Image (cartoon, rainbow, N blue to C red; front, side, top):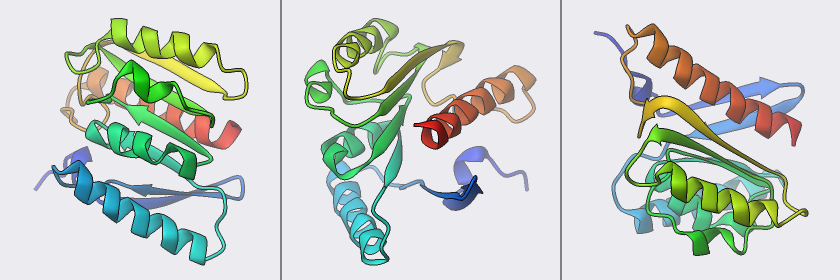
Length: 166
């Protein structure tokens, strides 16, 4: 059986003394994800972890946007269900990685997010639109397609670089 990149449920990456916990919450209800995320955050804080970053994929971008004050930094990839208003109160570093071929957060909308974030010097931000890719390109791609794999890996590396360098 061939494993799809979206089959991964969680992993831990250690780089330069920093531990990045990658949690992919599976489900379709943002409220449930919100409650689950609050429990994970509380458990991490109970263990003495004070700097928490988050990566939100698709609707997870909206989920983590509700929790943005909780995180030291966050990265939103092929985000959905977000609006310009969602970024007006962002104070922590944030990366937005969007797709060129996107109907949920088209490049024009992502550029509006970038305008808002660029007016906030207190919050480092990275906004990037990946050319030739569609919604979900970072987790739902054909592992036999070299260009798709390369695009996903580029986004993953940009996300990790953002987490480690900010």
